[in-house]
Amino acid sequence: MPLETPRRIVTELASRGYNAEREAVTLLAGAPDSQRALEAALDSVPDDALKLSAAHVRATLDTRAPASDPAEAATGTTDPPVSTGNGTAAPSNGAGGAPVETRDGRTPQDPPPAVIAGDITGASTGTGEYDDFVRVFRDRYERLSKLLRGRVNHRPTTAVSAMPGGEDAAVIGMVSDVRSTASGHWLVELEDTNGVFPCLVMKDKPIADLVGELLLDEVVAVEGALSGDGNILFVDSLYFPDVPRTHRPNTADRHVQAALISDVHVGSQEFMGEAWSRFADWLHTAEADPVEYLLIAGDMVEGVGVYPNQDEELDVVDIYEQYERFSEYLKEVPGDMEIVMIPGNHDAVRLAEPQPGFDEELRSIMSAHDARITGNPSTVTIEGVSVLMYHGVSLDEVIAELPEEKASYDEPHLAMYQLLKKRHVAPQYGGHTRLAPEEKDYLVIDDVPDIFHTGHVHKLGYGKYHNVLAINSGCWQSQTDFQKSVNINPDCAYAPIVDLDTLNLTIRDFNSSF
Ligand code: D5M
Ligand code: FE
Ligand code: ZN
Image (tube, rainbow, N blue to C red; front, side):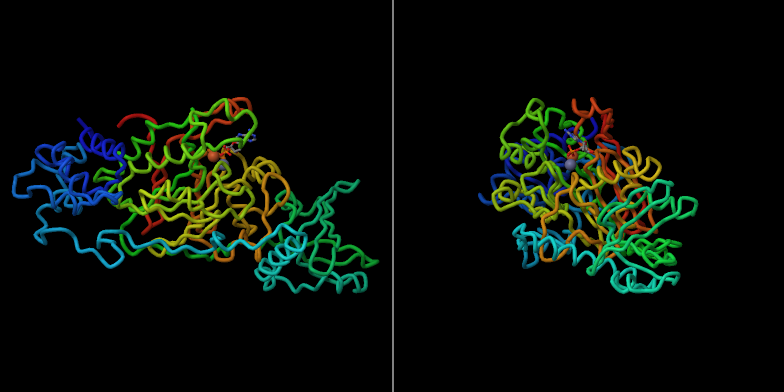
């Protein structure tokens, strides 16, 4: 019966509070009496251990007894067993005994740790005062204008105001207003650190189409000619900070994969526990052997009081219990995978962005898997590939503000392209997206990532923008009453799997049994 033994082992270990390495499960599944082997292994684990390692199992298994065929038992397939390092190779690898542990407790098979940048956790200094907002917007302007300076020969708005009419001029500014004039042209006000300058985009120019992409507070550059009186700039060209078309993404130098998911929503009545377990079971199979990383882009739990009347659809009403439950589901995931998690708007951290990672109390609840917990957004580098992880609340805004063909719930990756183009994960301040003013603007995309990973809108969408792989990862929560009322059809129980060596993507569907 496919997967039954490993699945039972994983479930049993999880119910007893243990998370297990894939290889440990494979070894147990291959033992002549799996149940006895499991008991023996657990007896041998130190009291404070949370993870059952292959070394623990091997130490208690009588490896001289002929095991049936661990690879087959583990995968449930009849394919010829491939020596993947988690199956037949392990008990007979000749090296013998437990793998050597390095000083930090990692074994040689463990994936190298992820490197994290741009994490606000523990670095928050903002007090929410007016001055803090001035500072963060100034920082945004400084950093984004730097990206535009090579493209236009701009001057400060005060200098442009002093120029005689009719001359060519360029301005780099934050969009402070966009409105249409009586004759259907567009008046765009750009603000820099000196002042504001009005720019007119004529409706019959090809660039008029770009005005539809503008969001308030984003930074752009314009070029054109001043009016006769010098009071307005007639725009000929409009530039976004953007990702260079020549961008060449980094790739891993070995075959290794990452699963990119989000929006688990444990604690909601609509959380799809069975689909989750199918996903976790699959991760224990030989086919998933290269999947060494699991990235979760926010909304681990359903939370409480996030939306009006949300309590009517809660399965678990206590927020800590929701995290306990989430932690149990996380234990089903192979213990030797490296997990990186950022919070979302349903999680128990401050709502304003940048959001810090989970606090100590929540970390201790989710400690079993030793996941890397970081802020929203964060850039995580795994195997040399940088992944910008952002939950995605601003996507609602981008989709609401932009024309359907430029961003929609059916094509959420197009909205992600807009964020890359604006080089900011949440350009518009004051709508859905709340901003916590910090020392600097953590939401600026300084370095172009190789992969951009978001969630939040519960729709699967992916594509490449100037060679950056953008993935919006869907969810593990079936349609809620609210979503039904507004006609949102979520994409549930899909796991996008990225080859880090090629950046190719495979979508795995866990909606039904194998
Ligand atoms: O949000 C999932 C998606 O559904 C996201 O696009 C927002 C939208 N959503 C869900 N519930 C509501 C309510 N009550 N009001 C407005 N928008 C909503 P998530 O935050 O991940 O549940
Ligand atoms: Fe969500
Ligand atoms: Zn969300």
